Length: 115
Image (cartoon, rainbow, N blue to C red; front, side, top):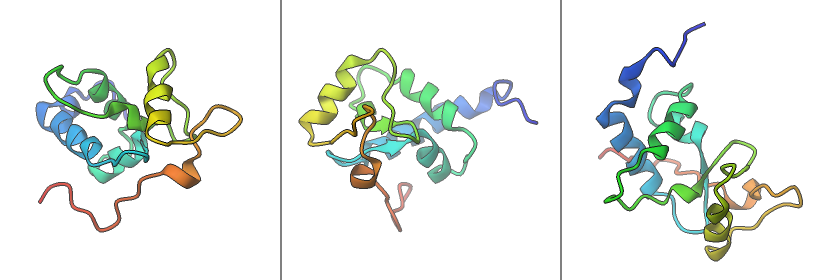
């Protein structure tokens, strides 16, 4: 099994920039997942790397990172503001605290982020 922690090239400036570009396309009231973003970028097994890229967004960029959740709709542990921001955009949650993915998952079918 490949150890993705060893592959430092995936967090290149280009990879991070592409992640930020995809996240910027997620409309208010919708969410995407780390895995969906990784798959859109052609790296389907790099969902953790997407998370790492989002953790290091430069402060001068406006990237709506709060719209990215895990595949089950769970929020980032310890980031209390994330739920507040999503609620302000009309995102609803299930009883278990996860985003209602059936209602709010953004699926950019036929959309090209790199035109």
